[in-house]
Length: 334
Image (cartoon, rainbow, N blue to C red; front, side, top):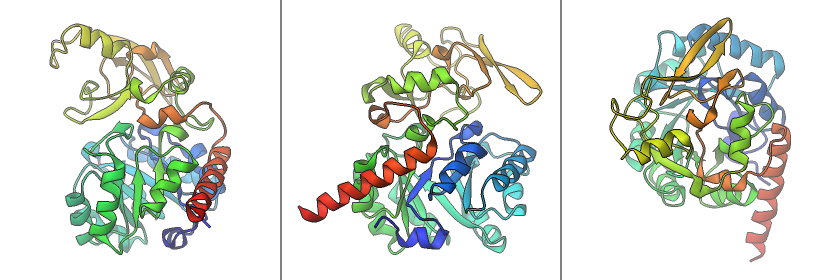
């Protein structure tokens, strides 16, 4: 009942993507679990060096034979990242925060489908004109870095109409069956879901981060530019924590004059390398983080209000699908 034409095109059973949460939060274990449950598992490779991207792709292929995607952030593009994906012939390449036009033909020559995540109707139309295979539209309620400026309920139908017949994927505010059903009913052919999958057992996020998110409501998130060390002037939605409230209490000063600027609040290990994390860093706390998450960038969408537990990704996919089928059946009978 939920299978859409985009599902058939991508070789998946359910219109469910895990969002490519960057820094490796969406790693091979999470992506494989989503793939094997029938969705499109997506590796979050923003700010990840090319050799690690290759390792993660190969690790994912050792865990599943199903189609998958890789997400790369163009604003943080490093040498070799795109090449790593195309050399490995990844089935789907998702690009965010930049001009996708230089990559469309290269992706297609490698047999890779290309999907940009967009923040507006205008951006989606430009991507469609460039020959992409689908577009993803992000609502402002989304967690992480946010290009969208209006709610998904407004942006989604406008983009569906603007790029028809190109498939559209919804991003932002989807975390349970009814919200997935609403996106499909509005014309989306799939949804990219971050906050719900961040609270999966497989997501490589610090336990304290996941616990903090489970306790949060929509009003506990803020749309801000605060966590800018490593990626300045890029809006994002995070949980309101001590770093935010101390900055707010100081009068919301600009970068360079904020409380604790430049002071390390924790460490994170990347393989054999351990690095200090300064306050206002763009990096979220991964499972290897040591320190106080109250000073970290705790990316979260307003859909955290719908997230009440941490459980296996396969159960999340199952619950999303069953809940959406039930919600759509109710709509059909209404």
